[in-house]
Length: 125
Length: 125
Image (cartoon, rainbow over all chains, first blue to last red; front, side):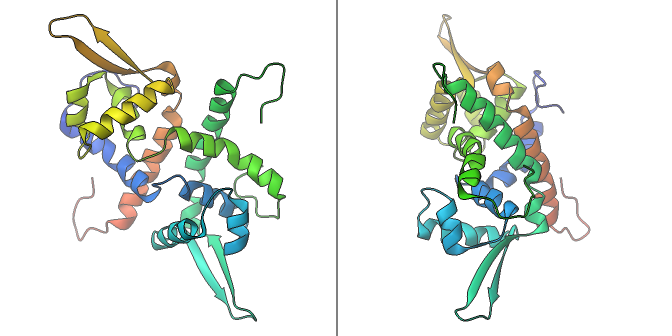
């Protein structure tokens, strides 16, 4: 069933069609998880480095988001027995399976940015 | 720059790369907007019908989400001068430009559902 289909559908069909989308959104809820996954898809990070990379995220929020991502096996937390101990976050192969989702969102965000920001002979960004 | 590239990148580059993603997430924040867009991509709805279609959404929340989607020109609210007045919500061409995003999310949600629900000889959906 293509997304654009414009004909009456049964409630049951609709609910069933929506279900996977709701599942996905539940896992990725909030505005930070996808950004964290994008960062970790580029390189592994320690907590502090990651916080520095993501403008505006509070330590408590980052900690919560990382925990939830880890519970869903989208990222991995590795403790290295160094002095001092190093805790490194990395993306899992399962986390990488969100690559298309993230890329489509980013592409759409680029278009949206161009649409809402109408520069007067200026540069966007 | 492919999403999976695993080599050190400059902070500035990273921020710039993340920016469109943050824009997209700001517009689509919360767990309802994408579901509302999916519903409206299938057919136009009146408020009450739409609320009936989306399990668990409160009227106040739906009203807020519709307003924000309308402000971002992703949906359109049309008032028909009938007796009683009919208010119908429909997706705009701009809202339709999120089709790929929604479809990728839904596809990922399907895979995720299969992964987390391990049926014992049962049916998944």
